[in-house]
Amino acid sequence: MNSITLGDVEVIRVEETHGPVGLTADQFIPETPDGTWQRHEPLLVPDHLDPTDQLVQVAMQSWVLRSDGRTILIDTGVGNDKDRPLVPVWNQRTDGGYLTNLERAGIRAEDVDLVVNTHLHVDHVGWNTRLVDGEWVPTFPNATYLMPRADFEFWNPDKNPNVAGGVNEFVYEDSVAPVHAAGQVQLWEDEYLIDAALRLTAAPGHTPGSSVLTLESGTDRALFAGDLLHSPVQIPQPELNSCFCEDPEAARAVRRQLLGWAADHSALLLPAHFSGAGALTIEHAGAGFAVGAWAPFATL
Image: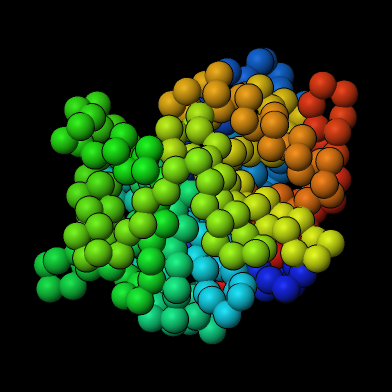
C-alpha cells in the first residue's frame, strides 16, 4: 500500500528517490560512540545502512494528506535543474520522476492546495519551483506555501553570509524567493492550525524554524516529523544529532520530547527520510525509545 487512512485523513507516500547521499554513518551522525552502528545493525540493515561501505541510506519523499477537502503536500524533496555543488548526487538533477509519481498517486500539481515546508533545507524545498524558460516558477500554481518565518529569515543569504559555501547555497534564490515573489508564501511562527485535524508546531534545533505536523483525527494520532531524526539509530539513542543540526542541544531536547509524545499517544511517526517501511510506532525503552512496529508504505 502507498496510502492509509487515519481518522478522516488520507495519507499518501510519494518518493522522489532513495539511496546513499555520499555520507558514511559516522559522517552523517558524527557523535556516535564506537560500536553503535554495529550494535544496531538489525534495526538499520538494509534499508537505512549499507553494512559493506557504511553509507547511510535515505529517502527523498513527500507525505501527501487529503484532509477537509484539501490536498496538502509535506516537503518537496530535492528538485530538478538546481545548482547544488556540495552534494553531487543532487546537482543539476534531470530525472523528472517526482511529478510523474505524484500524478500516479492521482495528484496533479494544480490540485495541491497547501505545501508545507517543515523547514527550508535543500532537500525539503527543491520542488517548490521548477525551471520554465530560464525562470524559476512555483511548481504548484494554486497552492499556499506554509514556511516557518524563522527559517525564511535565517536562510536568506542577504541576512546570513554563512549560507555561502554551505549545503543550502543557492536554495533561497531558486526555491524560496521565487514563491514569495509570486505571492504564494504564508509565513508562520510558533503554531499554525491547518484544520481541525492538522496542526503545525515549531520544533527548533535542526534549523531555527524546524517544525512538525501533528495529526489528531478520531482515535488516530500521527506525527510528521520532518528532520527530527534521520536514522532509526536515533530512536534508541535520541541524544545523537546529524551533522546538519544547527543547534545541537535544542535538537536533542525536541527529539526526546516528541518521541516521548509519539510513544505516549501510540502515534504513527512519519519522518521525512526513512527508506523501507517509512513509518513506525514508538515505545518507551529505558532512557531511550524503541520501535514498536513498522507501518509499511509502498512508494510512488
